Amino acid sequence: MSLLVIGSVAFDAIETPFGKTDKIIGGAATYISLSSSYFTHDVNLVAVVGGDFPKEDITLLEKHGVNTEGLQIKENEKSFFWSGKYHNDMNSRDT
Image (cartoon, rainbow, N blue to C red; front, side, top):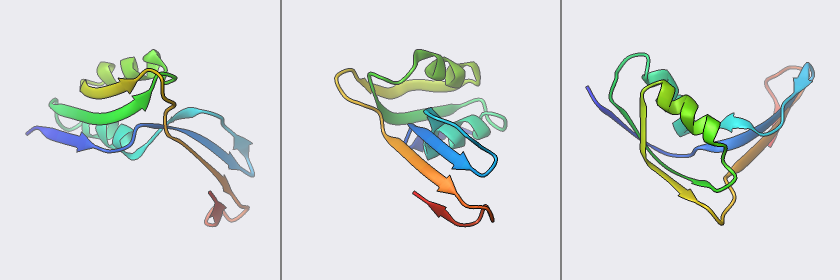
């Protein structure tokens, strides 16, 4: 079975009461592609990132067998960025 994943490949910054991360790999298409690679060896990603997106994150996808030929890199643009702060109950957040 082959899978075509179209969506966001992005950066995330996440803060919880237990710690904080800044500019980690994120995006729905990223996680769908990575998790699907454990069940099928034909995962094809279509997304757009900016020139600031690290090559090592693309390599991570490829090491999991994700076909990144459909990943367009806009060299003069910035990648999508999402940030969220989770509250003490870990159910409510500010984004």
